[in-house]
Length: 407
Length: 231
Image (cartoon, rainbow over all chains, first blue to last red; front, side, top):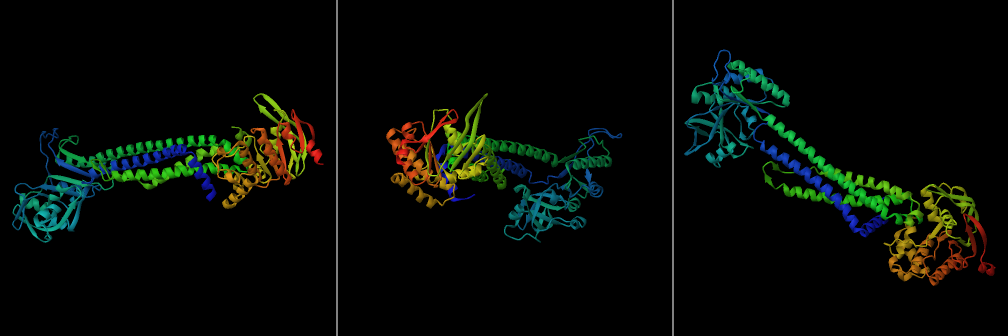
């Protein structure tokens, strides 16, 4: 197939019809180019939205206290519901769907943190070990709060990157003691968080310690848990069961939406996922459309090429060209043009995408395109162009030389 | 060289069934120089196309070089054309985007001859028709007579058994026509069979034998005066 003479024939034919070649090439180039841009932009949009969700575990359920709004069992409305360690234990023991579980107890009063002669104000959260997974906390050194800390009411603290920088500077904080509201804690770990600077201005301490030291209570302000890889239906079912369990324990109507607040990110995430699915579908629809337009363009040009060259084909046949040599001459020209144009479309598309990737806009981030999609699209276009040319080329190869030469 | 037995050919045009050749019996010997004459519609071009394996016939037998040319595949037809036959056309039929030598070399391309050898042979054959200095010119840069000489060089380069020429002087003035005919005579003297279709008597007179067609049959057949004289 690949012989020098044939390439000479193809190149001379391409040179002979620069306009026709340019138009064919442009159609193919544009089809591939647009497909790459569309796919890349679609991916960028998806990455952007996923980035917005990066902080918290997306499969988490948050339970907050509320006030009853419906009288129940002879109890009046307007009762405040509050949570305790027992609620936490109930969730831990009775629900299989609960993966990582934590409560939060909010400190009141003075929370000034001090180390040496530095005194700074940070946000302090008292939590269970499971909290690490709910906030996507990433340990940099040492360890997170563990079960023993909770059981033994240890005075230990895990500090964020910003806290570490502000209090300790270059010093290694592990094993050092800091005071929070006058109580001394030993630093056992440092962390960072994908959720941004604010999340790294937080100090985590064991919830049991906080409850005992600051208030002498077993109250919990908020409970959160993750649901592992449960499906959205299973999560909804779990939500329903959890609500029912709380309604029984705290004696409120299970239909009372204000007694406690259950919220999960999964529905919102699911909505975005559906949005992505439709965007992806749309992108593919348009992309395939542009490829299709390219194919039609190539087919059109091929028809014209064959018609244009009927006389030439007749002469060549009279001089001894076989039908095969005629068909392969026409097809190879089409394949060379579409392949080269498709390749440049691919290059240009990827180039534009990489220019866009430096852009940081809300909900648009890091557009990428699977290069193989582009390669496959180019190959499809080349094959389709060849097939489109095959019919007229075969017809032309069958034509009687005499008729061809009369045109 | 060529033997035709009762060749018939008809065309279907719309509702009309047009019988163009109504039974042609003909034999042409090696080294002959024949002209086929006849008014338009007599079937002479159709006969030439059948002889050139450019068209098929309905019934009868056609032997070329003792090979029965019947129901050939396109590929076989192309091979026989390339091996046995050289064509010269009224409208020259040179490829306009190729230089004179490239046009002459084209049949060798289909014989898979090496490019360098093709070029050498093409220039040699162009020299034989007196156009050595025009090898790199495009057909549009040549006169009609020169183009036809390029076409003749192209028809000769495969060393065919027979040259088939369809009105080779039809587009040329009489002086150039005679030059082209002299070229054909030279080719014929080298032993190649030449068959031309023409409607000009003075052109036919330069051949050795004249076959007259009329309404699809051979009306008469005879040696030309010059052929008789040369005997």
